[in-house]
Length: 219
Length: 219
DNA sequence: CGGCGCCTCGGCCCAGGGGCTGATCCCGGT
DNA sequence: ACCGGGATCAGCCCCTGGGCCGAGGCGCCG
Image (cartoon, rainbow over all chains, first blue to last red; front, side, top):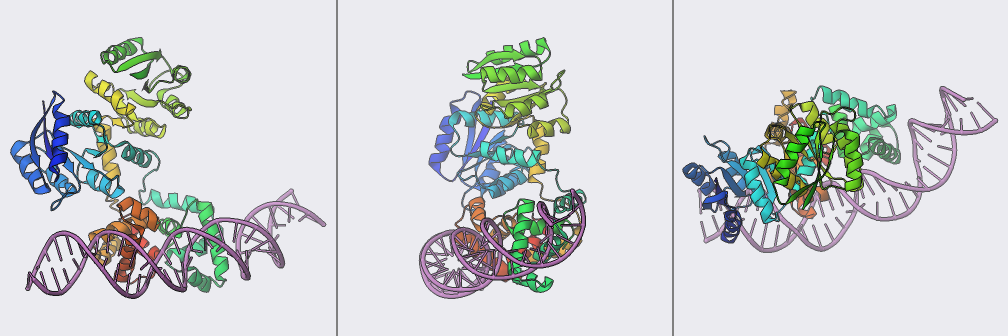
């Protein structure tokens, strides 16, 4: 029997979740709370296996509560619930030690599944989150700041000497006009260079290029 | 009914998996293959919902097969199975478009759970893999050139929490509209934040602020 | 209670950024 | 002699970025 704690500031939501979860014979809802403070207090009293935690709550919100939950002696598996699939939430949630991140439009069947899954030690993320996370995990060789530097240099190697000079100036925070003054060319020329730099690097704005140049040690 | 294809070079393993999966009324095993070539061929013929794929197989191995499966018009959800929890495998698997990665010591109940989970569009990773992946995804501290880093952090300390979030998104190269989408606010609000960030930092454009945030290890 | 700071948003304005076309010049390779 | 690519610039377009003003809500503190 998986002992579960529900925390959401809206009574109706808690009741709905309870209905869904208790339809499964393997799950028991052992408590309900309405804010982050209660979440921590109840988790200590009840030592649940799984805590379902809304992110947006008055006072101590779900993210703060999750961080404190994961610091408890018998830390429960924490699943965060939210209406909005925001990057900031996801990062915050995972950094806070959550093992689940679900949207509130998750079907009942999936919610039950999620409780079982996290209870077994797995993670359970909403599909959209999973997608972004897999992309990040699979794609890049993460920046070792030593290796990231050479990687940046490699990507920048397609640039010509003049383009390199322009990009350095851009990475110093100069406007196109200032770059022109610094390098002795018209602003229109600077813009032409920046355009080709972005095209070569497959980027959409100067900030990304500036960061890359910075990583390469150019500024 | 979830239509499933099993691929493993050992007959005994396939039979065992079939026994386990068909114990669930919602799962049907529609085919079996013994190597990567067969996996691709059968997937085209049968268009299964989920493919369970062993990594170590003679000829075309599971990773290569997974990559080709994910390129199919009606790509199945691919779950890779392996005895050894090697980072190299995990990266390869996820890069190949797999949505599941399980060890062969996974309990039967969990395997059934996994098939349902991936069929719903979620990911299903072995706990050990999940743990490493979450760490990397949540990874806040590159812990590198700490020299200018603390100085940057000092200068950025005047920013509020929300402003910090906005600046991070800006430093990732996002446009104001994209920042808004990522943080759940209107573009006008983003612009208000950026304006105040620049004023607080005494800077004239977002590139300078982005570089500073980058130095602080925020992006 | 009344401030004050933070967060939120709208509207307005205009400067800056970026794409596109097209042009000239120069240089090095064919 | 020709061609290709880099560098230079112009003019045009539209979208984005940033400043400014004003507004309302919320939470905290004296």
